[in-house]
Image (cartoon, rainbow, N blue to C red; front, side, top):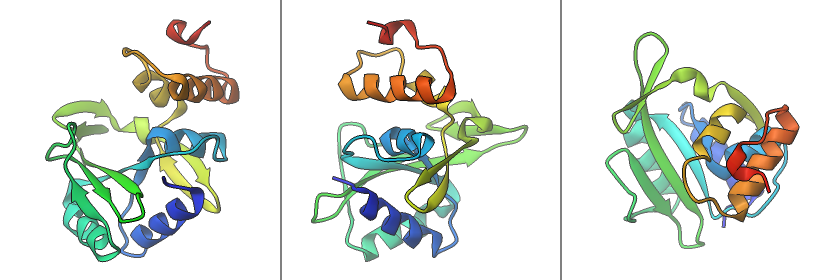
Length: 165
């Protein structure tokens, strides 16, 4: 599990090597809400591909090891330490004209224009709209529903049809 203290310490450590990061997933939702709303098994961190070597060396130095899963790719790796803390590391590239690329898919770079708070750390993260968009098109669980409903309420966004009772 990745509690708030673990996340803050990890993010401070990454900041110490002057690498910018962006937050997605459940911690990205909680950053937009402004507090931890549920337990998280991991943290989704997005970094520029050019910083991968520095960040993976840092993760190794602080006790994380790369773990293969059924969804790991060259641009999406998983790192776990002996305490069960997990980092989903996503490698992105910024292109011309406000574009961002992740796993050869093009996105508008403004999907990371969200600003949130994890403890005392202000973070850039997926916007509420992007989070809600990425929570659609699959069979969702209770955590997904909770995340979407909280984001919609906090940010005045209509609840998508698949999340209405």
